[in-house]
Length: 596
Figure 1: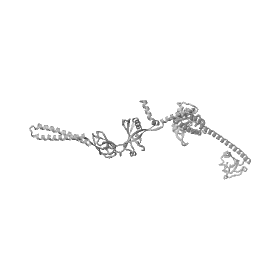
Figure 2: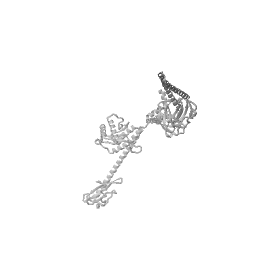
Figure 3: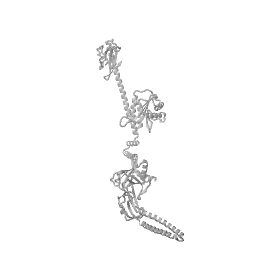
Figure 4: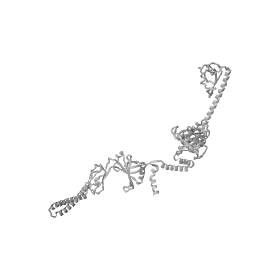
């Protein structure tokens, strides 16, 4: 029988072919480095196998000993018998080596053929980036490569698994029971993410997989089914990622497992994953149809036609880019910087300016007299009322004295009643005159026009503007502002653009960002936020209709501002298409022409 030399030759002694009956002890070493048979006399050890003659011949493959053929004969065998056994074992060893060499060559041929098939499959599967063509190559060539009866490829289309190709058929009914059961099976396996092997028994499967695999097996009449999820290779390495690109279903109508089938399925799944991922990435490129059309025209047309095609294509691509590429839409506005806390001082009464109590940029406190007015009409009225008051007061004293003197007259009752009535009338007149005097004195106090806040006088050269000049009630005298407090920008936005601000404000539900700079130039750009958009439109300085917008000013910009500083601002209205940002004025003009 054929046995390993490690347990026989090394454990027993070895002798040359000339010494067939030399005794060996168990401690001796026997080598099989040569190709001639070896014979050893086995020492008596109390058993049947330990009492005899051991004959062995090594067999080789490519000059390498891979085993021995050994024979144990009784100790009584003759030398001629031993020599015959050695020749027989030498022949058997040669035949065994030849057989192993031929089998090794056959295996190498099979492996080479399989590698050629794999290489050809890889070339055909990756030959095209068209998704449907790639799918047909996978199922048809994959069926021959794996040596199965049918291969189906299911991919996720619009978040639903649908069969893309079935080997052996060009078209199939997507509403058939088998196709629907295939979709259910692919969905279940995709959720598990594991290779599903069906060999006729579903007792070990979870309920989520048992029902769909049983339904598909009944519809397809397949005895052996392999459902393999295809995961796309990662872009930066050869490892698989979590992106599932499809499900591969392989069927055989018999229940026999073929040698090497599992390895071939793994190879097919690896090729299919990368090919499908490439095809899907290519198929989902934007403007793919347009690019194909341009390529076909470039290949088939003459030079002039190609030039026209390039020009037209460039215009189309440019037009599409205008609507696809996003950009920040900003509404331009002009305005002025002003302190938030400011007051205009108006003339309370008609009069003339006697004294101006401050100069431009002068700091004043609250209740400081800014303008002292004088009203001649008010002074005349005051003197008249005072004279009438004194006259009435004297009349009242005379009536009171007359009542005292008439107490002893016979007709005292009648006269006393008349005097009492006259006295009462004079008292009422005196009270009325007193009230008028109080009112006149209050108006006289108002002639001293005071500052309502702490701040600075904003009016340029108020003394030159107001001194010794008559003013009317409600006329603007000067302005006072708190320049140390918060500042704001008062922007004027044209009526045709304010709608963009209102729409953006409603969309983001938070204050809009504003970038602004000083109109003087050379100043940095600052950022603020919209505080308020006026609720009405007004015409300012007989110009176009505008809407006021108030913008909060950051603290770092306050030191660069002076009251009334001209401002150039842009209000951020969010992302829009590049074409709208560039051409919104043209669009709105054309739209108004067409619709109105």
